[in-house]
Image 1 (spheres, rainbow, N blue to C red):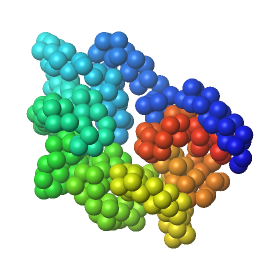
Image 2: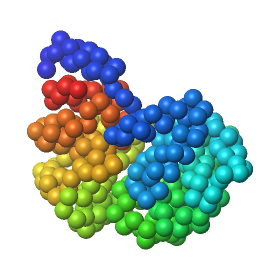
Image 3: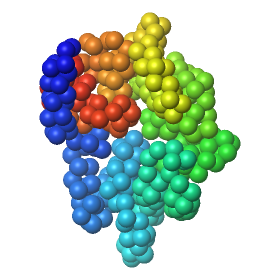
Image 4: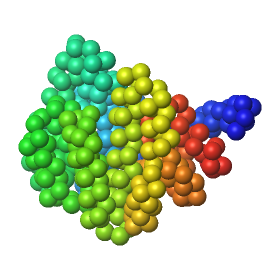
Amino acid sequence: MGLFGRRKAKAEAAALAEHLVLDRCWDDFALDVGVDAVVDGHRKAALALLRESRAEHETRTQRVRALADAAIGQSTDIRELLTADEVDQATAADVLLWLGSTLISEAWKIRGGGTARGVGEERLKLFSSRLREARDPLMAAARLAPDDATPWVELQRYARGMRLDQPQRDFVWLEAMQRCPTSYPAHAGRLQTLALKWGGSHEEMFSFARDTVAKAAPGSPLVAMLPTAHAEYLLNEGDRFIAEGSAWAYVKLNARYFTPELRAELREADSKGSASGVYAKDVHNLFGWAMLESGEPDRARWHLERVGNRPSALPWSYSGEHAFARALVRLGVTI
């Protein structure tokens, strides 16, 4: 592509990016409405959505995280919902789950992105202080709703952020698995726990991803753990090369990473699994990205046509400005 072609593609991507719905990678109109309501301070809308999803773990997890992000700054108000006269045990479990998840979201808002070194000691102290508050409400929610895997999935995020030791991280993972062995968010959380940036290693992360693919039932969305691992690896190694000032190593990493063996492995996982269920858009995003980067444009196009205008943060936020829009332009996908 020549200079003018690149400029045109860049302009098309920027224009397309204006029509994207960010941070809402779901297909749940009620959740869209509920998130807007919570942002405006209507907290009972969140309780209605959580009440509806008590028997549907993956829907419940997706909803509570979205509602937590919408409620950043409202954790004190959510806590006060527990004092209402009409709060029964099931409702209390909903409130406590939402409170714990909101405290996690607030903690990450305080921390911001970037490495611990770049965040600063004072902000890290505030982050840890707020995150520490999430434990008790989540444990209380787990006691009140003993069959619900969702509090344990959220406790994975707590354990990771607090950098608890491996036995404690293993404990919350196993508790989630006992309640929902096929939980997509639990597996995604486990992969993050095993990633190098959270104290694990590339080897542990890829071993988990490949083992998950091998054990996944045909049609399972859990096969998306493999492209997730590739995205995490490329981000970590790319950041390392940039920090070291090794620009050429960074270029080679991205140009030569997906070997024929890795491409074949991705195709096999893609063919085995299915972008089904609550997290279908996440799966389409992940495989769409991986297939594009590995030189499989037809498979990439098939997946990204099914994303619509709702990209997931992972992996597109790892790939620079307007990464999703640039991918659509490159593949000729319209939304």
